[in-house]
Amino acid sequence: MTITQKQFDTLVGTLENFSKAHPRSYRLRVALFAILGYAYIFLVLAGLLTLIGLIVSFIVFSHRANFAIIKLAILLLIPAWVIVRSLWVTVPEPEGLKLNRHQVPKLFALVDELTTKLQAPRFHNILLNQEFNAAVVQVPRLGIFGWQENYLLLGLPLMQSLSLEQLKAVMAHELGHLSGNHSRFAAWIYRIRKTWMQIYERLHQSDQSGASVLFNRFLDWYWPSFNAYSFTLARMNEYEADRCAAQLTSANNTAEALINIEVKARFLESSFWSDIQKRAEHQADPPSNAYSSMLTVLHNPIAEEETKQWLEQALAQKTSYADTHPCLADRLKSLGYQTTQLETLPQPATIQISAAEHLLGKMILHKFAKQFDQDWKAAISTPWRQRYAYLQETKDKLRALNQKAQMQTLPEQEAWERAYYTLELQGGEAALPFLQDVLKIQPDHAEANYTIGQVFLHKADASGIAHIEKAIEQRVDWVIAGCELVYGFFCQQGQTEEAQKYRARAEQHYQLLLKAQQERATVGDYDRFQPHTLKALEVNELKQQLACYPQVKEAYLVEKVVKYFPEKHFCVLGIVRKPGLIESSDASHKLINLLVTNLQFPTETYIIILNHGSSDKLKKKICQIHRSLIFRR
Image 1 (cartoon, rainbow, N blue to C red):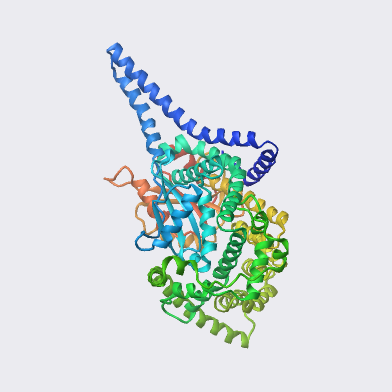
Image 2 (image 1 turned 90 degrees about the vertical axis):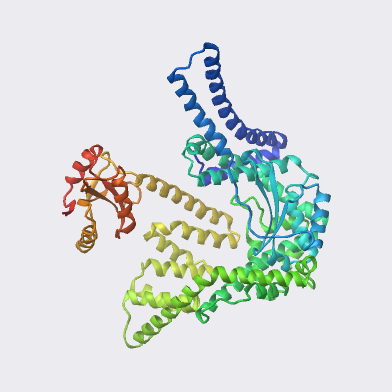
């Protein structure tokens, strides 16, 4: 059984206090919990192998081997094999351009220096990628048994944004997680956390039914619980990694690297990429130099006003249990960065020679930039052209609506379309008056309220919350996204308690969605049904679609009575299939797949075949519902 976010937060808070009062006992608990995962797997495997061994011994010493004994041995071998196979989970290798020592000797020399000083394991691969990030990734060759292959991932945009000493601090932080100079226990737990997280994700993505039976229920309990128990240690490991960076460079270099990364990451998200995407309005093809131009911009200082705004937002955020990484302000304070410096919000110093230029050389840097330009353009070309065509069509529609609005008052739907098209082409500020026009016509318009809420919250205007609330009252499928918007707003404002309320609300709604999903996953004669609420036109359209399938003899349509989100109607379409003279055993499944793929439904619908003997009671129950028969051939 998985634990909820509220339970997770409560458990982590309790363990955090316990770790401060009883550090040795806390570490012992974490170690025992780490061992428990391995113990469960080995005990299950050992138990199965012991039973198999006993059966083999019985056969050898008794000289008897009847069919029942052999069958029992095979039945035990199957889950044993599934366990071994499940543990051999393969984790995909990270993506990026593989670098070699001959190509970039200065970079490899720096990595050698850091791994030696920190007594960190050597790297089997150093990859350069397009991300604004740096990371250490360990891929377990033997699944849960480990034997890690170590990758150092370096993002070219990050390298271009930092000085050599700042990048050295970032790399020292990443290597600090695996350092032998400090807490070997913390480094061991760090590796185990990463491995279990990878195993958990891969097993949940796999289609091994045996693995699901044997491991999913255990992992659904174990990984969230172990994650909570080791969370405090993982956060302490982040501070320890920062101290490693400060010792190898300096506290100032480490702090300035953190500030620089925060500011330039927000610049890329809020300014650079949005400006690139805006070009799709006028250019049919994406630019050929996106990464080259990015590297040029990142080398230069960001405008002082924007820097101050983004840094204020970053410093307003508070450390929470959503991430093991502490907030920027806490990390800077831990490094001894002066409070007066925080208050004056200094502009990051201009970088004369970037770490990328120093470690790669200008020729190699130019070569990689061109490669990333080509890769990005190739990946984005098709969606870019689709976006360009859509925006040209949108321009024409907006032009027509603007002309119509000059002559008459637009009805609700056209007023919304005008606001939405303006938003797409000109942004939130330009669309705001038209969105407010929609609310004058229909104050409860969900889409307009949600969009206005987004615009206001983006401007740090708390009045947007009321609009978000009004929208998600009407659209339950928007609740989580709406709560995330408000949560992000409160985090930026430093209002942690208010933010946590929306986070808890999103978690609670997610649990309800899971229950609703389970409730709608099956249909049986134990369910209650009621007449469908589709309009006559919708039923006629459905009948016309069903007429195209000669295998369909009769069709019945009802609604299942549901407990969770009853306002979202859940229809059941019961099909009586016309059997063929010669047909395969999976003919019913093929028909269901065909109908699910091709039929257009106005609401969520479950399709079931009513021909089978096991469906007689269900068919009788559905047939008794008023107006259930909608098609008969």
